[in-house]
Amino acid sequence: MKPSGKRIILISLGVLLFACLIFLAVYLKRVADYKKAVEETTVNDIDITRISDGVFDGEYDVDFVCAKVEVTIQSGKIISVDILEHKNERGSAAEIIAQRIVEEQKIDVDVVSGATNSSIVIKKAVENALIQGN
Image (tube, rainbow, N blue to C red):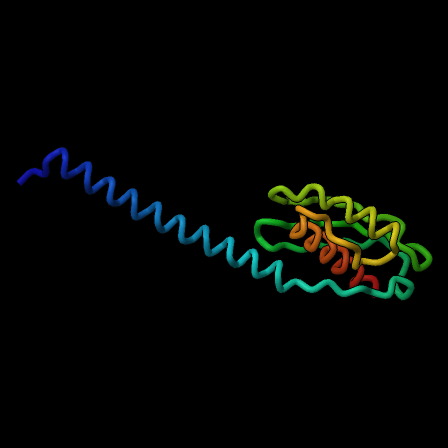
């Protein structure tokens, strides 16, 4: 028995709907994991005066947002924080965090409103860079 055109269309639509539901479920799981990763991220302040002079790279990735930074330390001070890469959704405003870290000479600066997740990721990348200099 040969399937009718209507039946083929209904089966095709059913398969397509099922595939869309699976894709949506996987995407929502990734978003939930991303939000949890950011929420559980802790940024520790590091005693910069104990860090060796040098240039240190650090990165941090929570799937939807990641940052790679280069931090320059000289005579116990943060001379510069350069953002080498910043994958973000709408968090590019958080890149001002690099300047704040240099100005305040600490990692634990205020986050940028509207770019909280990117702020946290950039600060954690800086922390990861400074850990290398300890």
